[in-house]
Length: 420
Image (cartoon, rainbow, N blue to C red; front, side, top):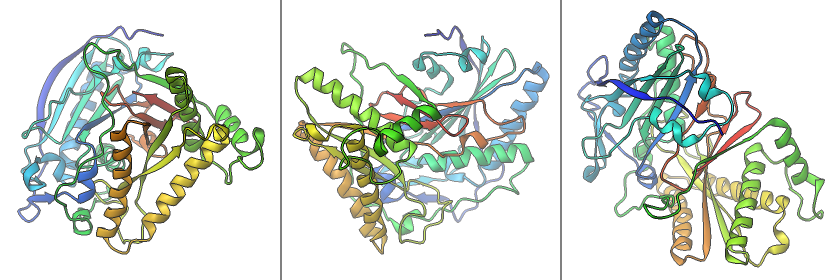
């Protein structure tokens, strides 16, 4: 394990406001009932841009980043506002996104080469302390001695999901490269018209890590390349087990990797408790283009569901990889089928709420192990080109929640799985 022997020093901190004032008519942005279901947390990710350029070139790139961020906020103006919780809306007051610049006393190659402790990347993202006046988005631009950059974006999950955050980041990159927002697809802000806020809605919150005095959970990073995933697919389709347990469909990369991790977690808890325990996998799924409602793909906000797959402790004979793959595939298919049935937003939210409530009840009883998964695979992180090339790597950081995050490798064929 390679130690990241670097020091990160914040050299600048400011608020970046939209380049033009937000017009009076959209001065508030109403959040939706699906936003209410999202965890009340800030979610960060980092994109790394390798380079060997002098300080003058770095300074020029930093100026372009700041200018284009201000420009793109004219389209994504709610991110420059402030959330008013009791009114369930964003005041689009143009107070701005918090923007930090940091100097890193090391080379980007230390991050990109070999293994490293994921927890050590946390210094590359802003340290957010939520309050009523906290910005909804934070950016930290980390400048390495070699000229490489690590650009971190951290957004409020109770306002936007991973798709919206990625779309915003890529729109920013396009605006920077094109020196303007003319080529950027504008987001739409109408999810609340489909899904008005509800009273007494509880968000889905992943289990927190143990606090002080408890054994800490260390973030682990696992990389599955194309060959490894092909082997897993072969096992799921017919390389092991009886014909009844084999996968009914061609399983996806995400499904086979999730099933493998799920099996390992079941084994760990069997060893810990001395017997098999029931478990539930909760996997987030993007709903854009997957419902009967006419919701644009470029909708700003949260629009996802959580599909639940279950393993019963009495099903020891159904414990092989193909069995778990089938359980996952069935849960995803059934969940998406359920989301295609509602003809109005209220009925769709009822479907989503029921799924989350079932998991909450299982967690309360304490007899079932709950595992949260979030897949960002096929999100176009590696297309984000600010004008000096596409990123060399994308990562998340250690967060105080028990959740497994899944992301594409740069070649698009493999998967990185991070367990917090």
